[in-house]
Length: 228
Image (tube, rainbow, N blue to C red; front, top):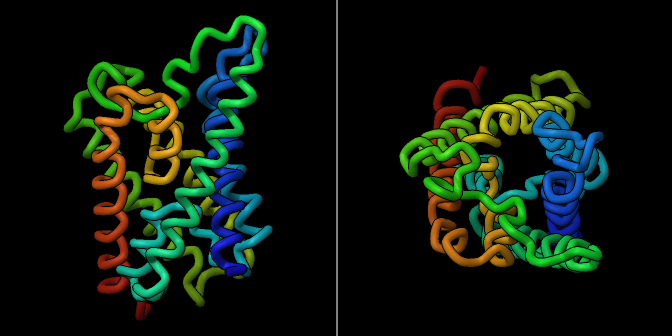
């Protein structure tokens, strides 16, 4: 249960901090943090919680990460379902709190895209389904390679959280214009449930592509890097 609570709170913080920065601060008049700030916010959520609860649960905060670690032989299959449920519930809880905050604004008329992920007309830059699928697959694959490599026993001790947080920052710098950046099915699910409509209909891609990329990365690490 300690592991599951750690995953719940870690994923809550990721969604609340990352998506919250996009909803409230990205385009705030005159002093908005922009895409760079949102990218950094997502990286900081993972970095901070990795050190806060990583020693408890391994700091997955992402169903794709759990699948990738399983494929790489670093996580037991019997724990997958529990971790994923905790991650999704944590993400939805964070989205619920974000909704309560944004709906309290004086001129509130609706939540709009709510930092949800999408392709085609729902892509910030109008990128196609195939472009988004490739992006999410490749970026999640490299994200898992970084996670598996930086947490490897022979890697420098104590720096994994920094490498992983900076990797997530870089991922957002690349792909916010393409898909609003997922690489995390729990994060995508929470925002799509509140944004509704076509965002929900497109949610399948943001489960399929990140998990597939993560599993491929796990197999690559296990085959080529695990014994070095």
